Image 1 (tube, helix red, strand yellow):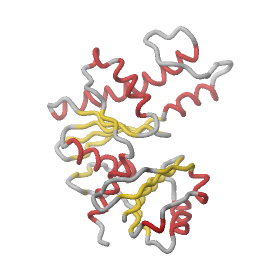
Image 2 (cartoon, one colour; image 1 turned 30 degrees about the vertical axis):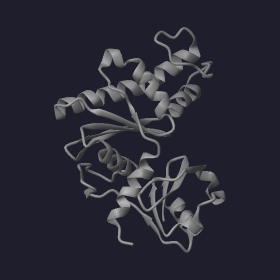
Image 3 (cartoon, helix red, strand yellow; image 1 turned 45 degrees about the vertical axis):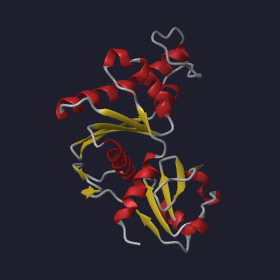
Length: 244
């Protein structure tokens, strides 16, 4: 069976895919604890990896999975029906997520991966047009804590009109992300002539989706499609292009 692994900036997630391409329950660990990860080596015959954490992590993973051969995926000019218009090296996690999203929608789509960083990418007519990268919610909150004096960055809640500092910070950070997503939706709608679908994945996807849906009546945003393990699903699809 196929073992797919997504090494992100902070965490590593993995799952086994059966012969039909269905993912079994995924597992996750911090990158700093990779050596303790319980990879299902005995079940796997093939390993595909999306790694954005650097060569040291790649070498460590290869040693942990030995003697299984490990294939580290890279973004290509074209894969699985999608053309890549990115001018420089595209993060493989973004590429795998785009492949999975296009396989799901076959429509103009904004793809949001909300992790340590938040990527907001665009697809239309089978072409990845480009996208943005911004700090994730944790980094946005942390920037206030680290760079302002006597600012309480306690746990807050999203509110239409925040009346305390924690809520003001939480709402401000979420509004920044929501605004960036809406802007990309409007640009893609103008470019494609269609109201784009919105696919989200990542640890903060549901949190951001709540804020998006709270504004849906005023922005025309349709219901968010949340897909768990979008990068892993993309790796399963990309594995079909790699010889056994």
